[in-house]
Length: 93
Image 1 (tube, helix red, strand yellow):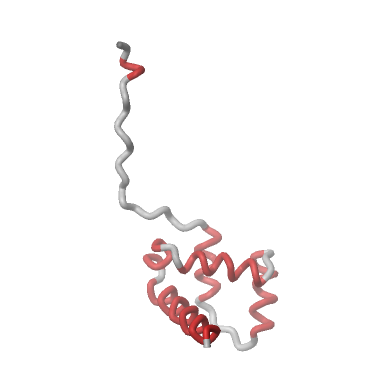
Image 2 (tube, one colour):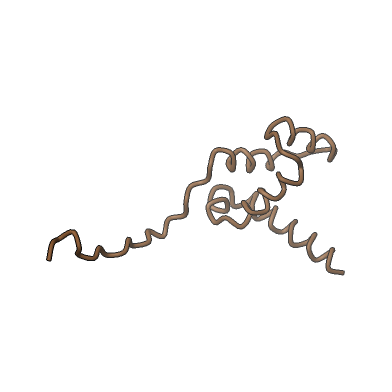
């Protein structure tokens, strides 16, 4: 039997979370800003990321569930998660 047919052990999981992409880091930094008017933020989303606000918030929502995002900025991600939960509870009523 040749050594080429020997079974290789499965890779051990490292437990490390994949790093955030540059775009994800930019979105977290962008969310850290305070906006006085919703329209200004929506326009800035289009200008900065070239995304519709709907697509931006879809990406942001996924990012909030990413443990690497929580590790990157726990205060911001925690605040955004609380806001998301509060809004979801409001919609269920």
